[in-house]
Amino acid sequence: MGESFLQRPYLDRQADSIERVLSLLDLPARVQGGQVGSHWVRYHLTPVSGTRADKVVQVAEEVAEAIGVSGLRIAERSQGLTIDVPLQQGTELRLLPLLHALPGLSASTAVVGMSIEGRPLLFNLTKPSTWNLLVYAPKGYGKSELIRTLMMSLALTSRRSQLSMLGIDIGGRELAVLESLPHALTDLATEPKFAEEILTWLSEEAGRRLVAGVSSPHLVLLIDDLGWLADKREEHALAALKHIGQVGVDVGVHFLVATQAPLPMTLRDLADHRGVVEVVPDENAFLKGKTSVGRFQFTSNADVSIADVAWLSLRDLNTASKLAVAGWRATGMSPLPAIEFEK
Image (cartoon, rainbow, N blue to C red; front, side):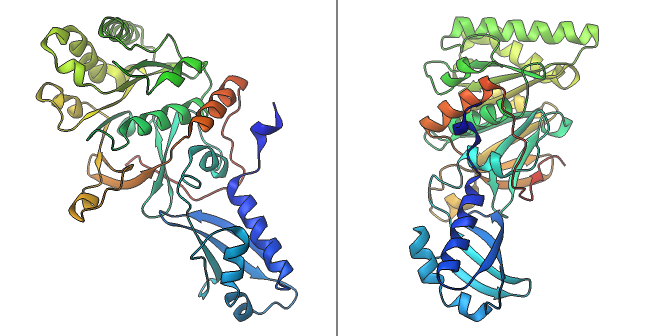
């Protein structure tokens, strides 16, 4: 595996940079942790060689300038010295650095991003309560990015023998990277006829598994925009999707799908199937007149979590695809406390 696939985790590099700056300022300290929140990364500092805590607090501006950020904070707290580094847009909330920073992830685990409490949000698709996902949001809010993030994180936590994927993206190519993954069973469907064939096959496969008592490998259906299924001419395809939702939990078949809000009447009963996590834009952002694109509310039964989605740039998508093809798996190198959305 190439060296570019094994870059040191972003958080470790930043911690090392802070240590070097403090050493140059004659204030040596150990920098540990790296708990990522919605707006900050918090590290814990342990002064060494007689370094005074109050002196470290006074050099916040120098440290900030040296590592290229603004608004950095150093403070003495009950648990010791902490340093809060503001998140830079498009850096810490990228998926690949987050995967590097997480502890070993089990197969079929999807990484969503960061909860507003400051912990990574995970979905384990083997848990009945987080089996499927249905997201509906206005155009441009980030639902395609969410589906892509789930897809790529599954590809980097699961082997092909454990999980396979099929994708539908009518009239678009938001999920085109699926075709480069070893987990893809076939090409991405971008027109209704092929999409119906995929849904019919998957529905029939679910039926065969039900009879045979088979539930592996996991089969994951990804759909970016269900709107085309609201057409009366697509009744057969819609019936196939609903059948998948009805029996999927018993046979290892999942759907992770997105559509524009409001959800069409003909599709609303999809949310009633077992194990469906409903995903909508964070309503508090709208009430406050903000446009927090990519911040969603995730609801499973009575449990609710709000999180910012970790995203992938075009370069990251290419890298992630190469990692998946090379067989790299997210094993974790610098653990962060994570939460599984599974209640």
